[in-house]
Image (cartoon, rainbow, N blue to C red):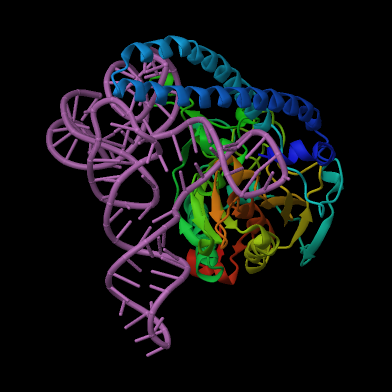
Length: 433
RNA sequence: GGAGAGGUGGCAGAGUGGUCUAUUGCGGCGGUCUUGAAAACCGCUUCGGCGGUAACGCCGACGGGGGUUCGAAUCCCUCCCUCUCCGCCA
């Protein structure tokens, strides 16, 4: 959520920054200012009336204590309708407040100055490239072929269980997935200094609102029902990313200055409806309804945000470096950034079987946007309460990492060699047919 | 799921319709005293909003929401959560 004071004081600046996203959200600013004005006018009135009521009520109390009952009764009838007026105005305040809130929750974050202007993914500049595209003396197979040949994933049976977009890992495939999870967690916890957490996989609506997934993108997530009670449907949602529960851990708290930065790392499955995405990358493991991911979350002081953002990006890149994968880092342009973000880097790993780069990580600085939505604050040394900045990054998404790993390290004999750092986890140096 | 007990400030814990501000204790911060510290004593110690250049003034919040009343932490309704016991269960 944006700061209402910023909208009041610099509406044109806000409109201009929002326009850079190209979604037309800037037209909401006028409405917000209008509703805000109504709210403030009604609030000033209601507070004046309440001040009067408080004063008179105290006088009545004093009169009754002195046993001047008739006088007290007279004052009561005098002020009887005050309550009705207050109730009426309070309804106005409430309505304009929730109206303002509703609009505010639909406004995306403002892009940072450092973010390149652009409209689509075509406009995202490459920040750097690591390694180069490997060359093979044979035609590299796609992961679908490799998975079938090596019996790592049973696509057909997964579909039998849950429909398309689900994976059934088998044999070495299941072990590889588990090894990767363990490898990633150990790397971030032991070497990068994150604290591991393992959150609930179902969360209440307020958590999705907190990170900015609701109310605007409600159609993309799975709601769950308990038993056959239709009323329970939508009370809980399957998490689309560990960011949702983990970023909300300290919601409605006031953290101590000394607690920051908070660094969390979590492995969770992620569930996404991907409505409307049918046909796009549906074959194989590239776009699925359930996948595993290790997520990094930081809660930092505003002045630490840029440095911590770069550190998080480096932490995610380290994963691909250790696994011997070629990748590039791109910065998302103003038109391609996520709703809550002020600045986002994507890491795209090379998948030789696809002959394309796959997004395996998105590392975002969300500024104070999520902290406002969650009412998460910290107390500065001078005793002031401020909103911290919240960062999140994948470290990394698993299904696509799995794809890149198989396709990159496939051998002429049909086997897949396992990079050295992963061998202790998988307890083998190669997977053979 | 059933029965009972609870939810008040950082923590503990009073407060069953009104006297000026939600007692009090602990912890924390500042001060006095001291070479320094402890003790003692004094003071301060939640969050949000509105108005004002400011000093300051006002409004709201006692788990959430609604109601009764001139006036609600207190009475009523409703929802949520915690604890104890029972049932079911990996």
